[in-house]
Figure 1 (tube, rainbow, N blue to C red):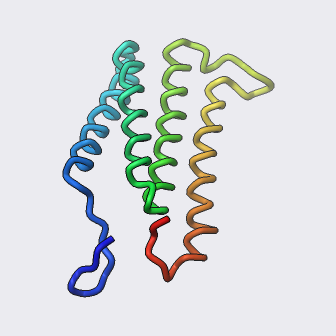
Figure 2 (cartoon, rainbow, N blue to C red):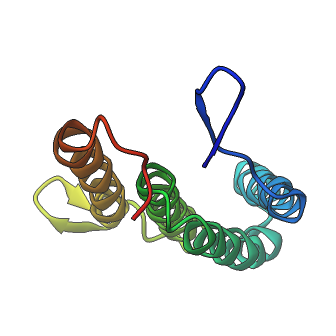
Length: 136
């Protein structure tokens, strides 16, 4: 983090990182459009660059706790979203596991892990480090 003239901490993203993040959005949109349009091969293919780039982004921002937590949560979100999409594409989403619980409901696991990571950040880490710069 650097300091501006007003002594406000700032976080700047290198241009190469920003380009990768922008490409990540393109892959993510292609994945979700493919899901919506039931384009199975493209949708499944787009899981890989979308998830890999989200993991790379999380790794590259690991020195900033806020960025790391949010980016890891995004990786779990993409994982949950991809599993849900695959379950619909392969027609096992409505199959019952137990009672009213279906295989689609298993997506709650990675969604829940993402929520737990953000809960850790907002309820534990941030209140205990509110007067510190957010680097590990």
